[in-house]
Image (cartoon, rainbow, N blue to C red; front, top):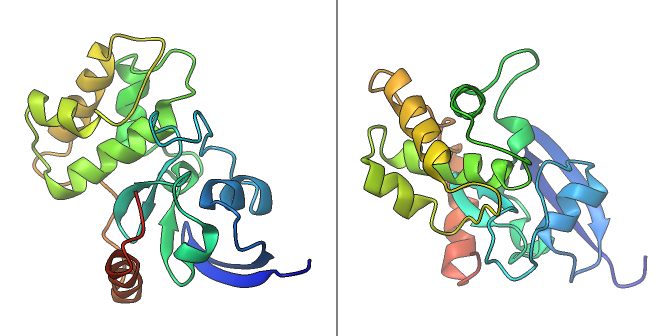
Length: 184
């Protein structure tokens, strides 16, 4: 590949490296290079939130980042939220409270909700709605999505239903990305 660059990042706890075109978006790196198709491309303009992932512990829209901008970072996708045979509490709550219909927006909704719950383990309904404002669902009226996030927060008994924060290396890489003015 002419003009390619090597990127390395930790994705869902696994170190990944690949040669990519410098203009390759992170969402396409995740989907096409790594085969992690749970992160969706909904609009390519950062309006819908279907591409939301965690970069160094913070929710970002992966259609607005180049893969090279995530070099050295920790990335968590929807595939990294649960474990084989065990859903993440947010995934379980979306299932139990009918927080999805077609499911296209669900990964982005869950990743945004996990970001909120990492920062605030007991959010109000208003805070949940604000946190999900950057995610569009074309099927529902959001009521059951909000119910699901609230249920996940309540079921955690005051403990966060969010994934653990990034490692020190991941945090340092995220701060470097932020200093460059990159991200969603």
